[in-house]
Image 1 (cartoon, one colour):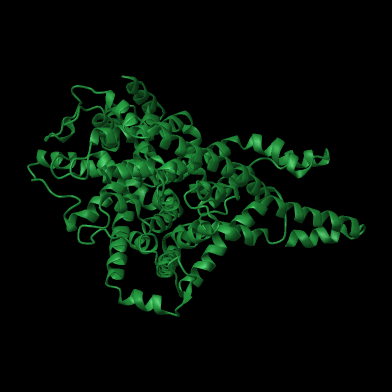
Image 2: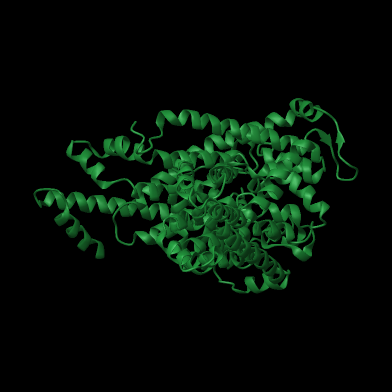
Length: 310
Length: 312
């Protein structure tokens, strides 16, 4: 009972004057209620994901049972193999990975450059420009859907990954990208100014200050941006749907949707849910790996932008 | 600006040399932000202006855009699906966002307790939010299945007969709202950060004054986190008005147009029927609607959002 020790700790520290039995009871009841509520919410929260994994391990036919089979019996790991064998899943995985990595690289490099400019340099109209940058965060991206399609079509970029990558090398100029500039700038603002001033006195150029001093120090913000960006591009559906048509460039998100509506998945009448869920888990794994390995940056990143929303 | 005049005054002795240095500094500033300026011009400003131009044209991508005046707007007003799509979207947004925020706030309050192992719960509550939308929607299509879906199985525990979650026009929108509740982790973390920034001394002071738990929450915590509530509300509404992927994948607008959301409807015009001019019009109208909602919120926010240091 590790939590019991904490109970006594809190009771001792608490402002209550008398350490009576009643006070103990109140704290124990309060904590028990707190844990019970948390467990309930956590179970509901994780239920869909558990269901996804459970279904992905079911033998064909078992996924249609009613009432549903909560735990797969027998457990069929072969579904994953089948999912790869019956489709170009590996290729779609590679496509998605390439797009997400290149877009993320561009986002982090160019956004940090712009963020440095806004955080550390003075120039005419900086305030106005920054307000414009912030206001693009509130613009619904949907307005530019049609014109950007026309633009990329004119450039001959439709059905290539370029529309999904190139705009992200423009320092948050693409829709929603200002978020990353904002996040990194907020972080850079709180770094001591003495650092750049000392470097300036020593004759360092601004680019050197950016590259050698600010970037290394801003690692938490860069990591948060990289994670957000990667997950955003990995999960994105609308943009690949519009800009990619052929099987050659299909991403995982497009494939899952394709699977649901075609004969590959058994047709709309009898979808092979176990294979579908196996493919979904395959898509989920990289996100989970990143989420768990960099969780602290992630949560801090959200908090940083949210608080700044004041 | 004040600092600039101060600099000017200070710089008077060796004016010319320093001025060129100052010019260089401005130039360097612009150099650093130039990727954004170029990106903003190319991928935001230009598309918006071009879209405005397109909204007065008929453009099917085959021939050049053909100027048609206001006929796209006239067509929209008489389009019987316009009100359906806008109504569906408004219904979804106005119901989903408050429920999402309430749930996110409750989850944040639960996570704000000083309990051991709270990080495990934080992860558990946040995890569904990072799940790819498509994987999640597909999963819910399976879970909502009337014959063998898990939702009907759970209803069965309470003796409720099977329902057609995504096939019943009355249930389809609520089914989408329920589905959206698994993606509130972002709002939750922002609330949590807001709650953790509430000074403990303030809560304690209220406690000494004899305020109970509920009154402390309502009169101290809520005003203190009101800017965060406002932030989540504004961005939540902007996001919800653009709901697309779930409806496109799960129901494709059906049953009986019950989930024909605005962006899905616009998508069909643009990318299934190649009515680029009309779709551009629809995009600008949606922008107007969202802008209106945002401005109303900013106006109303003066009455309930409390900013520290403003003295109100």
